[in-house]
Image (tube, rainbow, N blue to C red; front, side):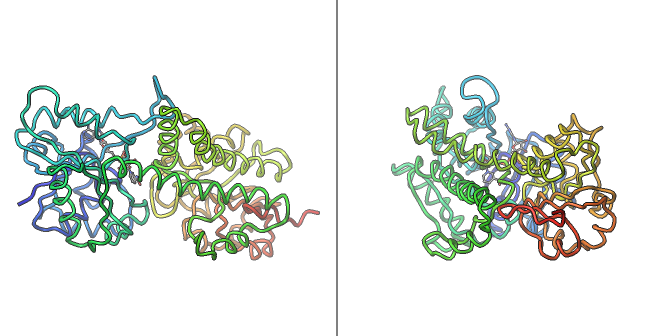
Length: 456
Ligand SMILES: NC(=O)c1ccc[n+]([C@@H]2O[C@H](COP(=O)([O-])OP(=O)(O)OC[C@H]3O[C@@H](n4cnc5c(N)ncnc54)[C@H](O)[C@@H]3O)[C@@H](O)[C@H]2O)c1
């Protein structure tokens, strides 16, 4: 029986391994983590992350061929294949601070694997890593006098939070990079065979290790660039009375452009886009490529501009003062269908609103606890209220910051009636029926369309 160990039981390691275990009952999968409470939660009905459909996948395989454990060393020793899916955040200190990837967790794993292994293993980079990390890892793994052979593969993960299960079950493609040596190709084939259990072979792409590593950073940079591109146009729309929804639709029907990731919004969030682009910027700079670095950096600058512009618009439209005004935030997760709040635009918006002395009330169906963790210094200045109706009561404004579908289905007449007047709605996700809201009596601001007002 093939044995897989995955180090890192987070948003990627947990769902990915659960899917492999579900699809390959003859493969034993053990997911390990140093975070004992996370490991415990994976074995309960209350999983540590919210992801539609995840419960059923875990339930099917848990205890059969899917195990969660804190016994990292033992799982490595037993495994034929070790996936490493630990976090690779942006470095906050020293050289490359604010841009480069912090590889300390990754390197610790490599050292641990080297220390305890007694048999040859395939090591799979699942984390998103700078291009050529495999080379550094191979040096760590093969340092000293351990005769064990390690073959490093790159298998970046393309799942999106909120649709992780569908993405894993039916991916556009799986990408596996391996060395062009006989042992590299053999290892690569082993991993291809596992995915081929449920994914058509033509969707399993193989490449060299460096291309696979760079493809992941490139994919995220391109996706984020589309968001920043349409957001740049949204600012111009507001200045010219063009409608960003119409522009996006018009260009999205061009098959060369395509319709996805063209929704103007308050900006992208999540743990990956910003960190991966900054990592790309750092990589370009470290190879002396200043213009490519500047080109990609601008995608992040544009995103920050959009967040700031949203708050500035709130302030200006609410008569240049929001001090003492209650503002209900609808949605704190970085997008719908996840409780993840990492790098959520809502963090910056809330901080800026508190900076203006607004009374902020945060509402979210799944992310209230994470929201509290994001703003530990503001807990006495922000209220948290799961029920959106209660959050909006007495508020001067509602700001929609996450595209939860339940926000489309609220009774906005009831919300309007309970609010201070004039009642504002700032739709940071362009997801509501603005004409209907306007007819109820709201002052309605939406991105790339500006303010619809009754106050002339
Ligand atoms: N979140 C996403 O949507 C997504 C998508 C694709 C790729 N990725 C990449 O996947 C990687 C993991 O992301 P994530 O969102 O799952 O992160 P995460 O923070 O949710 O999970 C990482 C886990 O690794 C554990 N860990 C850290 N060091 C460890 C060690 N030495 N031994 C054992 N466990 C250790 C942490 O305790 C944590 O639980 C990152 O490189 C990320 O860029 C993320």
